[in-house]
Every structure is written in structure tokens, then in C-alpha cells.
Image 1: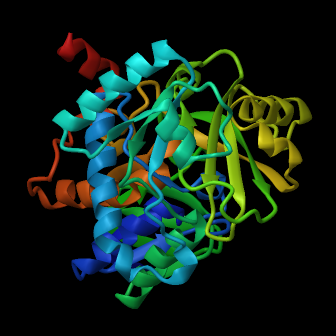
Image 2: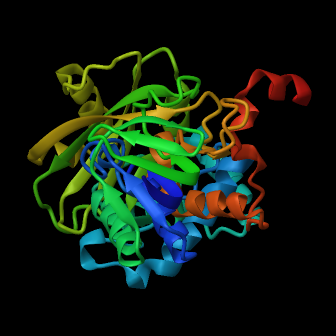
Length: 377
């Protein structure tokens, strides 16, 4: 039986970031991956590195994580395709423009650079947007990465620092022991479940699958300069009964355009759906009519792990399990790419009992258990 200080189940971008963070401490690290590293939720992510303000806790974690991405940007290999493109939140009318002003004040109070764009300034920044839009909010320090390559970078760094990777499925993980499908048995003081939507190791894990479609075009250099997101994006993200789409487009370093976004609950079929793709494209053309003339190269789907309160589970599995060796880094839905480095840092801070750069209370898994809710009430 091989012994480690920490075992991490899942080699997506979050699990790989956790592995590197632990390896940087000189810990004996084991990573367990039953499929393809970064082949599940990570591959279904658009690669946004963004500040999001759906809640104060979400704002704190995304801002902290983005700062870590930016601090390390010079270390990434070219394959990661990190670019500080910035995000423009597009306001379709004056009502949405008022919301832009409110959001800009929130960002300003949090020390996040953000500037208002008039209709004319928006058109100058992105000429392929349709005429008649009211303006927008430019968040210049947001970025773009290629998620599978970013995850591979974290995992390679962990291995360089001594981590060992096991390519087998974890059949059980409890009380400091993990048993793999190839017969290997491992032990560690801490076991981290850095899983997406598929996890039978902890049945009480309060995560739902959320299906998403992605579309990538042929190469059209200089067609798009920033990440563009409609102001209605968060309203779309909050729908839990109806399928929803929102305008969300991202320029890739290759000159391609990556187009989202769709959200579906209760649909576990992996096939791409023509009707959902049509809705996504129609929505995008409402903002960028010139997309009509572009060629699509590939479409695909993936499943993101969602929690009821839109916040990830980072910390000990207390409340979900009586096993003190289990820790969680899960439930990131569409923000796993952005939050990977921040989540890794918070998780290790918790393991060491050291103070974190931000308050980690809002992300502790115990918050979603009934006793915690009753105590809070």
C-alpha cells in the first residue's frame, strides 16, 4: 500500500491546481484519474478568467482567483493561450445600461477596474456588434485561457514537484484509504474529491448536472477583440427549470471564435441538440449579425457541476460525511476555470489551518447541510 500526504481524485483543472498547490509544500501527492485528464467539465468550459458578481462570495473568489492567474501569466507555456482580453458586458437598452452603472460601482468598491462604455465607444471597441446597443461595461483585466492546456500545465508542475498520477478509477475513498479499479490501494491523511458531476464516492454530494453546448468557428482574425457577454447572462444562469441561452462569445488565440452559452437541467444525454444550437446562434446574431456569414467547425457538449447556491464546495466534507479525511473541491459549474487556482489555495489554507486571503466560510460544504441551515436560521 502506497502512502501519501494527500490523494486527489480527479485531474480536471481544479484537481490539477490542487495537486500543484500541495506539491509546492513538499507534500507527497497522489492524483487519481479514471478517464482523460481535463476531459470532462474542464473540456466543457469556455476558458473565461473573469470576475463575476452574482453574490459577494462569488465576487470575492473570482477576483482572488483572477489575481492568481494574472500573477502567474508569464510562467504559462504558449499552449495555455493566456491572454488578457478583457470582458465587455453588453447593454442592449437603457434599462440594462442602468444596470451597467450599478455593476461598475460594485466593482469600484471592490477595487476592480471597470469602465463604462457609451454606445459609440462600444461600437469602436467591437465594430461587428449591431448598431443600436446602449453601451457596456469594460472589465479590462479579465482573461482567456485554453482550459485543457491550463490543466495540463498544473498537472505537469505537480509531477515535476514529485506528484504521482494513477490512471485508474477510484472504487472507494474513505477513512484515509483509496482503492483503485486496477487493484492498487493507497493511503493518505487527506483525500480530496475534485470531481465534476460523476461521483459515487460520496452519495450525499449536493451537486446537479447542468448541460452546456459550445460552438467553435473557423479562423477569423480581428473579428472580435474582447470577451462579450450580454447583461442578461446571469438571469439565464439562474433558470433551473427551463432551458436557457445567452449571448457569450470569446476570441481564441487561433483567430477562432468560441460561442456559448446554454444551460439545461435534467438532460443527461451527451449528444448535441440542433434546437439548442439554433437558439444559441440566433441569440448571438441578435448582437452580432455578421456571425451569419461565419463557418462553424465543431460543436460539443459537457456537463457542469452545479450547487443550489451557485457557490463551490471547498473544504472538509463535514456535514456530508463523518469521515474526517475527506475534503472537497467541487461544484464550480461554469466558473471552475476561473476559480481553480483560488480554490486550490483556499483548500490548502484550510488543511494547514492558516489564514486565507479571503474569507472561506461561504464555500465550506457544511453550509448546505440541514443542521447548518437550522443553526444559521
